[in-house]
Structures are given as structure tokens and as C-alpha cells.
Length: 306
Ligand SMILES: [Zn+2]
Image 1 (cartoon, rainbow, N blue to C red):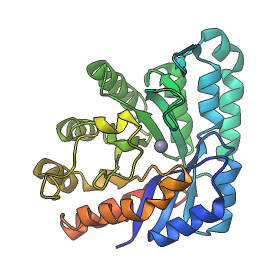
Image 2: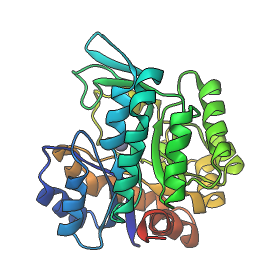
Image 3: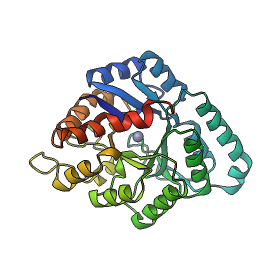
Image 4: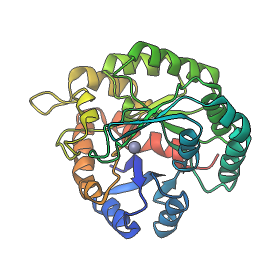
């Protein structure tokens, strides 16, 4: 069964040839690739090297950097904190930020925008990728304008929005944003993470929301990242998909996709295991649902210019 990875990253350091090789080894037929602390051009370069197999996304640097620069900043315990939207910064620079994003999207080479980290806890420089802490309300006018910018160009946007703390308020704000821009197509990175009942409710209420599944069956993720402990287990002690997750996968098969979240070279070394685990879980739902989750949804979101 063809498998797409809806959530892969490129950093400044990772060799593109290695990423291409690992995707091939894992049997990942196509991947949505988002830059982290690297220029968007790197994703385009990877796409040139792997024709038809990379869906490059914009904004992982271009827009995230603007969120950082335009935030109220502080630093504590090795964590850089970015909170909210400084009115003076966005007043002076906002037009330029959106013009630049618009120009990037108008090139017609990017298949979406992401990963935009809206609510993302930082743990300090000792934990990989976790030195920054972000808190940006998803229903702030700046983010609504981001959703509108993407929706006008018919590209999806991948957002990272954790809801394990301040859960009720964050879900309500996310719901308001999804309602405010109904034509946006929003992919919820890691499906929150949240429990199956909450995800079911959010997907049921918002037809413009998709969610990624990040299987943590065999733990190939850094144990030093406490955030990963907030993921509800997909499988029981027998290794089978838990019944409530299985029901959700079948009922919402049109709205789910696989996301490996590979970033570093060691993580790409685990992509094969992550893809194998995803395939083993997909084998436990009817084939039509599995096919949509494995490939069809990602291909419809990122795969073809509209
Ligand atoms: Zn990510």
C-alpha cells in the first residue's frame, strides 16, 4: 500500500541525499517536507532531487521567524519564550510578512504552509528541538490572516497546537479560527495530540480540519522529549489498535494522515520503523479506510496543484 508522510522536516545540517535515501528505504512514496531553522529553498532542492516524491511547504522559516520577531520575548532556564503578537511590530512589518509569504506561494512550487508552531512547549537547550517555547493564540487576527492567505491560494496549512495544558481555552480558540476561515484546510500536527473523543469531536465539528497520526508504537523518538509522553497510546498491551482509535480511524478515514515528524539524521534512520508501525496499524482497519489514511488524504491535500 502506498504510504505518504504528511509531516517530515529538513534542518540546515541534514544531508539531502540521506533524507532521499531514507524515504526510499522506508517505502514512503511521497512526503510533505517542512523546513526548520533552514531556508525554504532546501525543501525545493530536495524536491528537485526526488521528482514527484516531495511536497515542499513554505513558511516553516519564513513565517515562524516572523512570529518570533513579532512576539513578546523572554528567556528563562535556557528556554526562549515567544508569546503573543506585539502590536507595534505587526503594525510596522505585518504587510511585508504577508507579501513575502504570498510571493513564495505565488511561485506555484510550494504545496502548502507549515509547520507553524502556535502552541509548543519548550524544555530548554538540553532537549533536541525544544529550546523555544511558543504561545500564539490561533484565533488572533494575524493567524486568521495566515489561514486566509493559504485558503486564497488553495494550499493547506500545518499547525502545531498542543492542548495538554489550558485545554478548554485552546480548543475553543482553535475552533473559532477554523470557523472564521471555513475554506482554509488545516492539518493538526500530531493530531494535537489529544484523546480519541476530543479528536472525534473536533473533526466532526470542523470539516476543514485534518489530523496527523504519529504512531509511537516502537519508541524511536528521543526519550528526552517530555512532550512525547502526552501522546495517548494508540495500541493496547497486545499491540493492537485500541477500539476507540480503530473506530475513529474508520469513521474519520477521510481526515487522517500519517506523520513521522522526522527531523534529524538519527530520526530519519528510524523512518523505516515508523512507517512499518504505521502500516501494521493500518492493516487492522478495512482496506478502503487504510488506503485513504495511508495515501489518498495526503495526496489530495498536498499532491496536486489546484
Ligand atoms: Zn514537526
